[in-house]
Image (cartoon, rainbow, N blue to C red; front, side, top):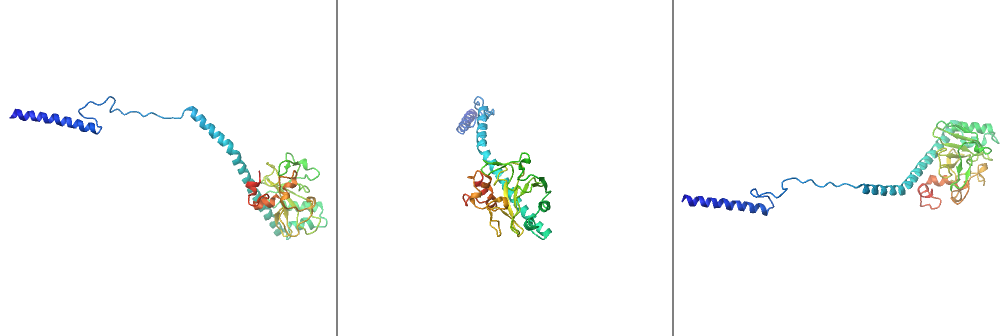
Amino acid sequence: SLIREGGQARQNIRLGTCHCALVAQSHNYPSPLLPLPQGAGIMKREKESAFTLAEVLITLGIIGVVAAMTMPALINQTNKKELHVAFQKTYSELNQAAKLYQIQNGTTFSEDFNSTSNPVTDAETKFILDDFIKLFNGGIKYSSSNWTNQGDIPSYDIYSLNNKTKGDGTVCNATGYYTNNTGKIYSFNDRSNIINENGPIICVDTNGKKRPNRYGYDVFLFLFTIDGYVIPMGQQHPNNPKSDSLNWNGFVSGQEYCTYSKNSNEGGYACAYYALQDRSPEDETKSYWKDFLR
């Protein structure tokens, strides 16, 4: 009896062992009673991936080509934005100075400039201009150059809107040049032949001697009004001078005075009017600063 019971127990052990191994294999688990496959139980190191030198160079080359294609356009747009901001600031400063002058003197700058006497003497003109320019931040006389010696300002040439014509100075060449702490350059043209008429015209280089020094880009014409304001050349106003020539406080307006088709400075004389509205003279649905300027 004892012998039979012992034999049955040994058989049960063998069956249990085989069953355990079969279950483990069916679940892909290693059997505790079977030998492990070669290398099993040892953590394998995954293969590391990296760019080759050739791949890096190709990628850098593509980036360089894209940058070369897009950077000039981005720089151009940035420069236009800077010029637009400088123009707006200049226009605001001119009107502030004109009103401040009127408050301090009881008369407008246009009235004093044109009708202190008939005609206004050069000494009176100089006194009025020097008094007005002091209203700007650190405004001082920069150069006495006028229409007879405009080339006396070193390295300061003014170009037409289309950049095909170069001159020694601006059309405002009667009274010399002024500047202030911001580096802007101001100049005035002749007084009016008619007492109590709008004027004078003031030319402003909104970023000074820094390029591009082109009409319609950073050089603009503005007109003082008899009621104490400053308006962009090209904007209609009561009592505007109707002379055909700018030499004697003339007034011009229209697309023909803001166009790339003229190979002369006159092609940019009335651009301040369109620049202030940010409207292209070629297409009123487009922007002056983003679309018209090239």
